[in-house]
Length: 117
Image 1: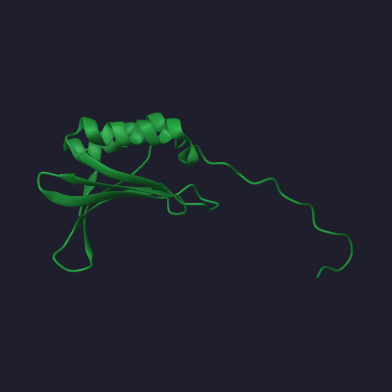
Image 2: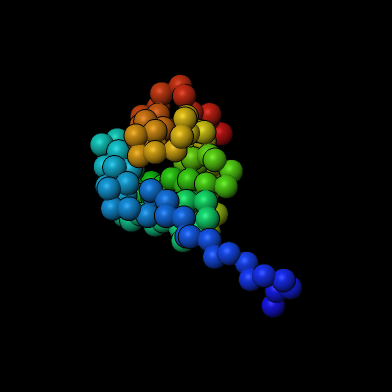
């Protein structure tokens, strides 16, 4: 219910994370760093969040982009249901496929631009 005039309908925002090209770029960056990518999931929300699950060096890991907080987190599965944070990094500049690819390479390649947990 509304009082007065009807609220304007806002056009839905489509984030780059929901496109096939973006998914190919970020999963390709993971594969290029020696990861066996399992899947890519883009959240249907206002912030453009997503995650990539993969195996690397015999360990189950995942990258999570929290669009609301603006950070990319690398986590590793524990023996239980929890995940251990290994590193995190903000994405420099406006989040785009190119900036995410550079950040992913930094997190997975061991460069110094990521904060180790």
